[in-house]
Length: 102
Image (cartoon, rainbow, N blue to C red):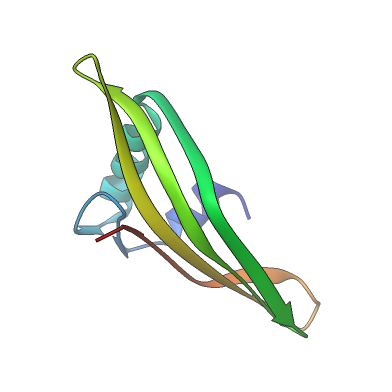
């Protein structure tokens, strides 16, 4: 499933850099704004994964970096993904969490 198709099915999400974002248009606007940050990069600093059978997972830490007002901004964050396979063996995201590290 393409990212845009996935977004088209979303009605609400808890965003990494924001509170709850509601509505397809607002969700698209959130991602458009995020991906347009100057010099945006993401570096994984810790990554663990595993799984068994029809369930896979990945979790870790990463840092978003971008330029704002001429200054480099670094935002440490964390993530977790869980994928489950359907009857045809196709894995889909069952749950995902991403947030700024406390």
